[in-house]
Length: 102
Image (cartoon, rainbow, N blue to C red):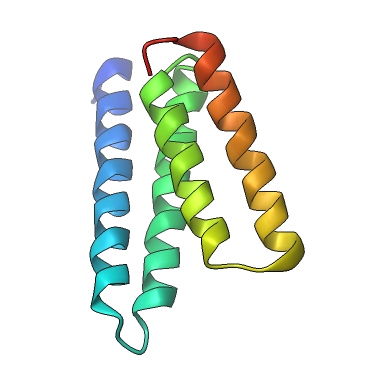
């Protein structure tokens, strides 16, 4: 069984991996790659959410979660993009409050 620290590290690294996958998929520009990139970003957000549930002051996860939400917003329009950007601003604001080194 994983310790809490190991679980945090696992979820964080999975979030980073999903974010990297999303970047690769966006570069492919194939028929389904934009949708698949959005799915990967959503998975990254879910992993970062797990990290923050275990450690609410995990600044790297908050920062990356905000960045992933911003990238998701770029592929959306209208109210959904606005909602995602508001969520991103909240995550990035919390990150700034908890750690000034990022």
